[in-house]
Amino acid sequence: MALTFQCECGNRTALFATGDIDEQGREYIEPEDDERVTYIVGDHGVLFRCGFCGYTYRLEKMRTIE
Ligand SMILES: [Zn+2]
Image (tube, rainbow, N blue to C red; front, side):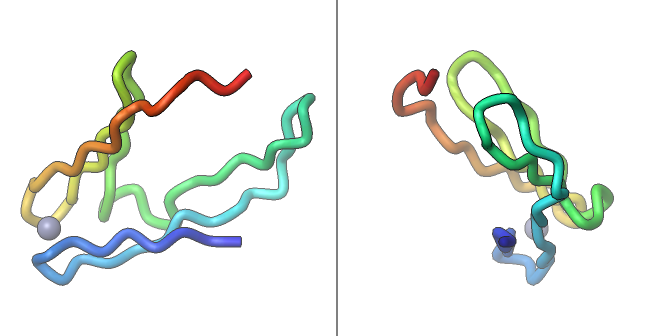
């Protein structure tokens, strides 16, 4: 499993499944190259910051999953 991050500037990288699974059966994902994208998890959602142009995308928190 992988998610692809693609910025308008052409920067493209993937977040890939690590094989590590938490106690509820959910698998961890990580950026394949952390110079291309930085992600920041906050109280209101997740920010993905492009490592090339600095543009930042915001994924808003929809609800709490637990
Ligand atoms: Zn960019």
